Image 1 (cartoon, rainbow, N blue to C red):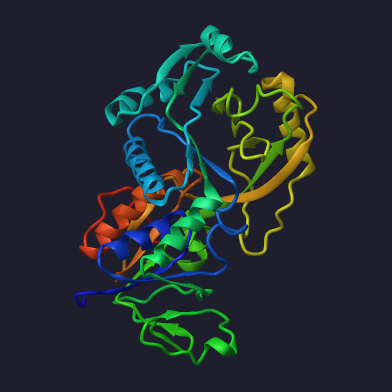
Image 2: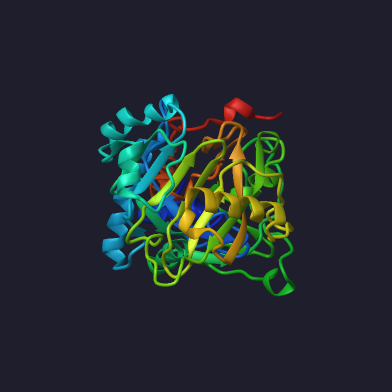
Length: 394
């Protein structure tokens, strides 16, 4: 590579936007490309809020990665004079003994993430607005909370441009790469007005982009972009999210009186208390049906809404009968074991693949971006989070 390499990053979401910013700060010339824009309604980084937490069970890298990410979120909040993280606490409730969940405790301690282990009686005393029926114990992370998703994703790209990066709203053609270094990035369905553009700053020539390195962080589109390497071991699933209106004059279910919560029972339910004027968020983490992020209709099902209402009245009695004020259909881009992909393409040394957020990736964005920049700029090898050699899909 030249002293100042040109790196093209495809995807301006939580992973791609932060990677582009850190690559730029590392001395590269960076072009960031996204089909519909950062935080758009099709993206996994769209929507209003995401959970920031540390508990992940035993034998995993994510607790430590979350601790680093939170340091970076706070650092950038200070630099940019904007708040994206709200430390309202995170409460995990368990209906069984929770041997897997107890495996989180030593990792939380090692990562410096504060927590309390609470019995059912103490949970009921602290948060009487929650019905603790069948709950046996819980983990409370008092300094965790939630992040603003769409707003922070857009802010990262805005900052990337302000610091000298180039952002282009373009769609990229899907293709599996041949062996050897990849030479160019083909833009999909480029309009005639963009097919003859040439400039010293962008390296756009007709409908191609030429760079020294390519980073694909295109979320649920990774399987389509790399149908042989990633496709067979990667699936996007349809996930429904509901926002219920909190009672008039009753602040028990708002962020000032209630933490972010997750309920490990018959199903894994989670949510965020009323905040930012958006209502009480509730979702089922169970993986849904396969979903096309480009053409899929984003309308919730009657069955999903009925199940959400039943659960709401069961666990939060004061919210029974609350009106639905918003709904969303988003997607998880799942790998076979829900771990991230951060690695080279197995047959193309100058191509990196970053993704597989699997429903828990957003919070890690700045730490993943920092890691990716270090690996790409130093021409390094991933310190395995998920290695592509495990599923080359030839």
